Length: 64
Image 1 (tube, rainbow, N blue to C red):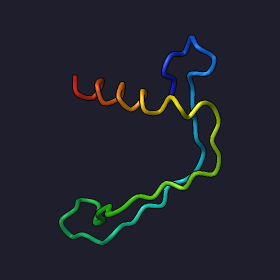
Image 2: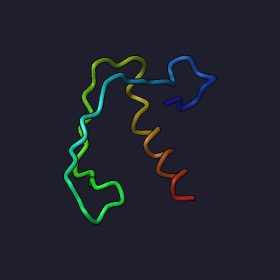
Image 3: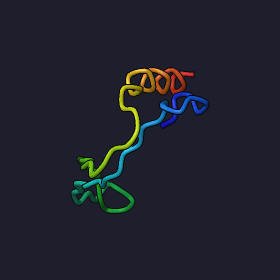
Image 4: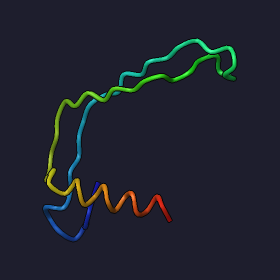
């Protein structure tokens, strides 16, 4: 995520993978229902102190 792309220290990114938990569901068109997701971080780079402001900005964008 870039909070302000013009500032050198305004980015933060992560690398990792998701584990999804599925159960059979005859009501679902695919036959499966997603019941859980876990993100495992393997690495992080950048300035993670931007995350509170970035979350607020994302929340604001979603509410419009």
